[in-house]
Picture 1 (cartoon, rainbow, N blue to C red):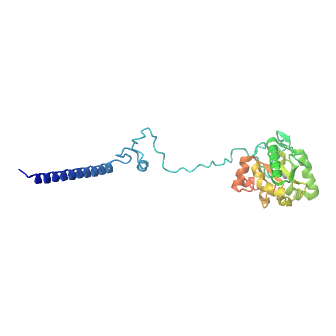
Picture 2 (tube, rainbow, N blue to C red):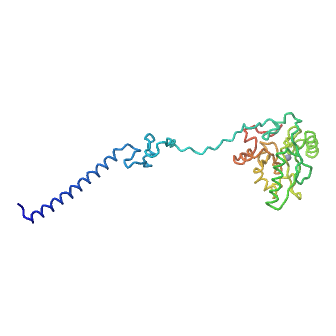
Length: 285
Ligand SMILES: [Zn+2]
C-alpha cells in the first residue's frame, strides 16, 4: 500500500516518462524523414513536388506535378542565328538584274541592251530623267526626304542613257579631254551603268559643283553619302578606288541595287561592288 503522497509522486514520474517518450518518438520521425528525403532520386521530392533546381539537373526523372511536361530542351545555348547574306541570290551578269556589275571588264550583254520598265522620274532635273520603275520610286522618296530634312533641294543631272545616247556622251568627252581623260570619267557605249536604268547623277539645286569632286562637300553630296543606302543606292565610284572601278571619284553617281544589297554593302564596309562580290579590279578596258 502506498501513501497518497507516494501515489502523486508516481503519477508525476509517469507523466514525465510519457512526455520524454513522445519527444524521443518525434525526434526519430524527424531524423527518418530527413534520411528518407536524402535517399530520394534526383528530381523527386518526398515533399511531393518538383524542386526546380534539381529537376533541371536531371531530365530523365519524370515530374510528379507535371507528368505531361515535354523533355527539357538541350541546355546548350543556341545563339540567335544571323541569316547569312546570299551573294548568289541574284545575278551579277544579267543586265536586267538589280545586282548587275558593269565595269570596264564587264560590258553589258548585249552591248546595246535596253532597260525595261523605264519611267519618267518626277523630280527636278537638268535633263529629263528616266529610270527603271523601282529605282525611280526610290529616287523620289530620297529627294523628298532630303528636302524635308534640310530644307534644301537636289535634282537629277542625268539618269538612263541608251546605247546611242552614250555614244554621243562619250564622244563629247573624247573631244574635250582626249580618249584617256574621257575613259576616267565616262564609260564607252555598252559599258555604262546609266544604260541599265539603275544609275543616276545627282546635282545640287541651285547648281553647285555639278559633276565635280567638290559636290561631295555640298549638303546634297554629304547627305547622299550618309543616307543613300537607306533608299537602295550605293556610291559607285568612291574616293580612292580608281584602281578598282576604273573611274575617278564621282560623289554624284549613285547606283540602285535594292534595299537588301545596299544595306549589306553599308554594313560590310565594302567600298565597291567589285570588292563585295570578289571580282577582279577593272582599271582599264
Ligand atoms: Zn554617272
